[in-house]
Length: 470
Ligand SMILES: [Zn+2]
Image 1 (cartoon, rainbow, N blue to C red):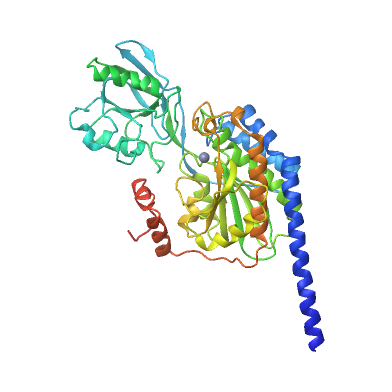
Image 2 (cartoon, rainbow, N blue to C red; image 1 turned 135 degrees about the horizontal axis):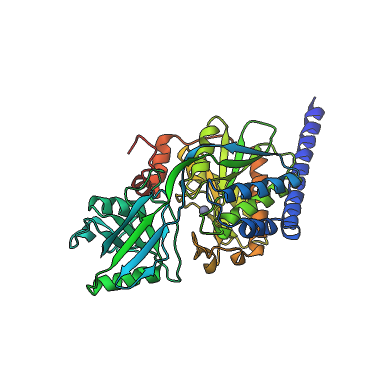
């Protein structure tokens, strides 16, 4: 009896050490293949150049999904397209034309959910940062309000949707936002996070043209602008792209990246890179993590840019799945560490993982800095542990965010290989770790988490606070 126990212990140790060696070999294969057989760069080039802007509900969005699906099938993945319905928006042939003091068709971009209005002309008034108190000395009634997006001193920046509401309150006919950054950049974005038509037209102007109008107004030179808005709101029925690597037990790790981009932007960095890295993660997991203990589900979310549509719907549709953790990749660069987003119980797991990644510069280590406004949010709201990489992007990579300049030439191939290796190793490790289990935080714990990191205020301002507790 005794000998049998001893031999069975030895046998178990052998199995465990064998598994460990196996896993280490997998890591080497994954890292080697990520660099030597990188497949994300080519896919990204196709998506950025053959398709470009792939806004939710457009034929380009469908085309990007077709390319991704066929490439996934080529590497042997079974692809599921999960349809959902959300409020969408169609950009029309809008025009914002300065008439007085000199004619100029402005490089203006309507914000998402701006709805068609007949052409009108009005004088422009300047309302600084767009806060209520900035209207004290101006009469905005029936005027077009000009607002700067440069950060105000000693105050948090206004959200565009808040500035629109304040302009409406002061009876303005439209609002124009001066972009914060110079370089004739427009910053596309939504007019609100709810998917409802904005009450007045709202446009993003470039820094240069916006500043010119601001200077004219400050010199008391009247400025008249004519606005024609043809864009309109419309429900759309797009798809999330899902690839599942079934595990041996209940419990699932979700890894996501949004495939959609703004229409004006080729979306190389936001978020072509995340989507392309996820493609390489699919290839690497398929090849080197065939016996995953927990299920791994890779999801290319659609409609992140117009209010987290795809991830919100996915979280609703998969309400009953036991999601152990969600890993989000949005504008992913060269890995510098891991972010456990307030789920500090996972710190030891990631600290341990770093020990296996000696050649990567993970000098940020493991941080706990949750943030909002990307696809991890619907999971986080549910109390599901969410993680991202800490990473580095070069300045010219994020500067053109939501603009025409977010193009393929900005992409650094090496960053894609690094991130694909690190994320694939992270997922391999997580999906085979029998020490982790399915545990969700409850409402009270999530409220405490958001409050601890000061995110409750922003979520409330955006109208996204999900909890009954204040
Ligand atoms: Zn993004």
